Image (cartoon, rainbow over all chains, first blue to last red; front, side, top):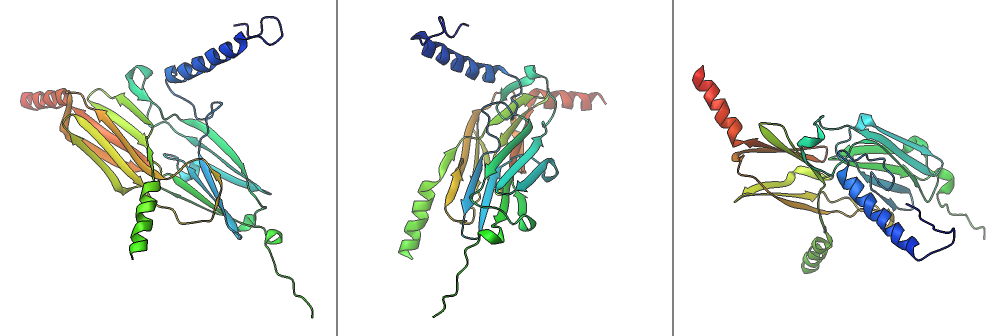
Length: 148
Length: 123
């Protein structure tokens, strides 16, 4: 499809764009096994909370085993990578519904502070990952003694 | 005490209604339903069959308060979804288990059970 008929803006451009978006949605619905790392997919979804001492990241990783997760911290950036294995290999014609997806995934999150990398703790419970990320010592507030 | 109750009500009202994504496929003698329900423990799961409808409900575990969110992509809530079950499924033989936040339901077919019975009779 020609998006720009003469190289300049034209009123059909938005329509074509809309058509592309609609096609994309239907393509996704047709694909037998959606892959988690597809553009636009955000897996896992994450929440990050912050206190004066640490940040806590929670991510939804249903069906992912701890040994299939790779968590790295560099400076103020946390990266969660992993793979979700398919439950079984069933030919596409046997599927009534296919909404979950499998494959490789990865997310990077920038935290509001640098991390004390030696003290990071990760736990996985019922498909919910929790990573506790203490602030690096140089980031923590400290009080200054005032001489009288 | 009253204030505490009010707070509990307010907290309950905040919980989101969530629709779990599912895979459903045919394994010949049974149909398998798999649903992503992260944060739901076995004791917080309710699967019931009633007049041709299979209802799944799972409550996500409350998380401890870790300060204000700086990034929020999901909210905690209750997973709910209802499915219409075909007549070829035997309602008396539906089993469910949840592991690592993934619910798996086995729905055995009536024909498969009948076929099994015939095999036993021949022996």
